[in-house]
Image 1 (spheres, rainbow, N blue to C red):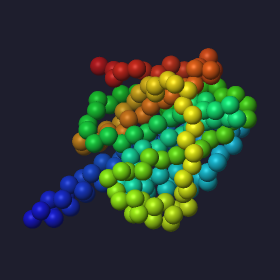
Image 2 (cartoon, rainbow, N blue to C red; image 1 turned 60 degrees about the vertical axis):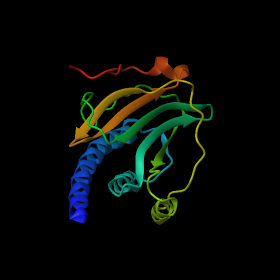
Image 3 (cartoon, rainbow, N blue to C red; image 1 turned 60 degrees about the horizontal axis):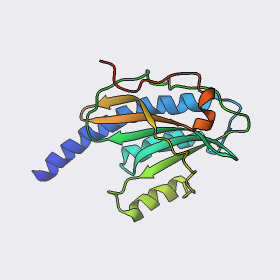
Image 4 (cartoon, rainbow, N blue to C red; image 1 turned 180 degrees about the vertical axis):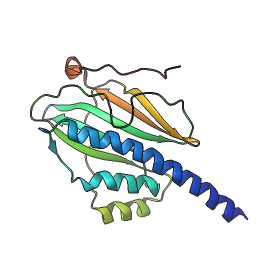
Length: 180
């Protein structure tokens, strides 16, 4: 009886996770296409692998980081939340953009789920060809939530962090709170 309940709950959560990662995938794909001159530090299949890692509970978040030799320029964060938040923000596939300086690179990083045993996570990352990386230095500003997707009792919070040094290059504004 307990197993059936857990299985049923997991199925719902899995459906919610699938829906949320599909929506976020549209933003991730839009970001990789929006700046054709940016050097990608990952293969296109990594975007699909992120969906797989979310679906199996191996990660709780993903970051798309634009940077150059001087540091982080802009970071988009997609964080899975086990609470239903109020949905707001731009439609899927329409993240706020802006200009980037020349010679930018784009990398994809993930947040391992601390509730999953480290050896199990490591096995997934190894199987998919992911490796640890050094964190980029954050510019001392907090990210702003520009949108939330939700499904069932889960939400995907979408955030943007812009290095103040490059803030004048951001041509679009982002909402700071849910529209009512």
